[in-house]
Amino acid sequence: MSRSNFTSNLRCSPATAFSIGLFLACGIAALQTAGAIAQPSPPEPAAEAEAKATAGPNARPADAVRETSPASEAKPAGETESKAEGATPRDEATAPAKSDEANPSGETATTGDAKPAEPAHADRTPAAPEPAKPAAPKEPEKAARAPEADMTKLRVATWPGGYGEAQRAVVIERFKAKRSISIDVVERNGKDPIDLTPDSGSLLPDAAEFSGEEIDAGCRAGQLLRLEDGSTNSIVAPAITSDFLPGSLKPCGIGAFAWSHILAVNPSAFENSKPESLTDVFDVKRFPGKRAFMKEPRFLMEVALMADGAEPAQVYDLLGSEDGLQRAFAKLASIRDDILWVGDSQAAMEAVAKGDAVIAQSFSGRAFFAAARGAKIEIIWDGQIYAMTYWAIPSKSPRQELARAFLDFATEPQQLAAVAQRFPYGPTRTSALALTKRHLSAGLDLEAYLPTAPVNLKTALSVDEGWWAKNGERLEAAFAGWIAKPSDANVAPGKSE
Image 1 (tube, rainbow, N blue to C red):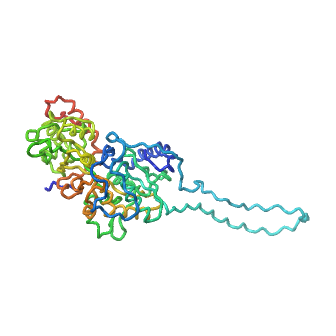
Image 2: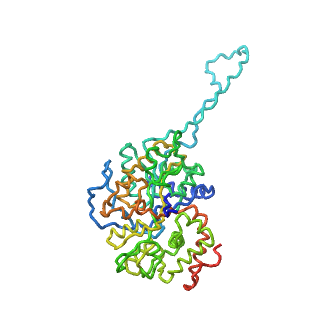
Image 3: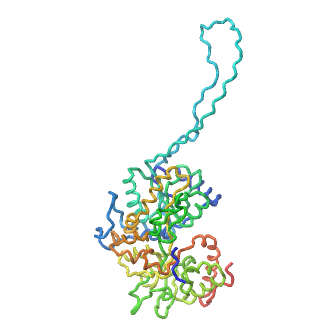
């Protein structure tokens, strides 16, 4: 069997600030009650957002993707304030909200059937009674007319940090110029879902980026628009379907980029050869030195199983069994004395930079930023664990046609390549990869840093977010129990339940 297994606090524009408090208090509660959509995980845990890619020339390289609109250049990728792993920005809004909705009452004035008063000079002599006329049938009341959507504007939600800045500079600015429309950009908070319920009102985006699990949950609940063409049942034009990497086309979402969990190594820490595989990472005799690992089971348990020889396609089935769980813990126990436990990937990378460790558990974006600053860092792509971010359309959006045009534009090869040259996530289209050469500000060759580059995908594992949603608590309890055992205990706790 082949080891390849490639298959939303919002920061709004000032116009939406007034409604945020009510949205967070009520909208999220409604989502949790309905259970309609899963908690998202932003592209690469947010710690990479603080990195400053200062190395290399600022000029555009000669082979950069040609600009097709007057959009301004993005700032060097990731030039935002430092944040703790998994934290999300909480920028204060400064202005009241502006709603696109009409008066909610929808009432219209009606006239009664009362007879007007007689004039003062009316003849007071009683008139002969006239035969009674049948009452005229009442005209049915006209229903209040729903306001037509303003097609000169669009509301788009994307992820925070340097990645979101790259999407704004490329996709949003270019689409704005192409369509001569205004776009209200909403910055997602990775810990909060987007409110897709009917009560979300003007806070509902017309197009948004979601994690894979959000896409699946929203599609099942009918809260995201199904994108298949009625005649071909194809999500995109049949002629370009094969250009998208496996797993990037879902019934309600079109994949744009992949980010990845990786292991980073300092090659200068080794005299002869350097570690190049997961097997090497767990071989402390040939490659001595501390391994800076994050003290949490997600990603690490998958890595342990693959380092022990498990195929990517087998990983989650194995972790779902007691035998598989014990196998992962046994592999970790084999190098336990050489593990330096850290709280997040930033600390792991710092340990390598200081010489406290020779290998770090990290993410592809963070490794790129470290290299861009001149650190001696290389990525071990063997057993990378990747996830994708998808564009989708809420089913309650009043601008679905315009939103679909935006999705098609956002996933064009030229746009994907231009975003990747500002922020090093892997485009989901083969043709976009061919256009993605060097990072615009750092000047680094991007093939060595993109999760979706063919050479980096050979032994990749697609993270199963749904599996972790169901099994996360069980694994966290088992992992905590194993950590608490003495260092000479080479097996996991007897029971993981």
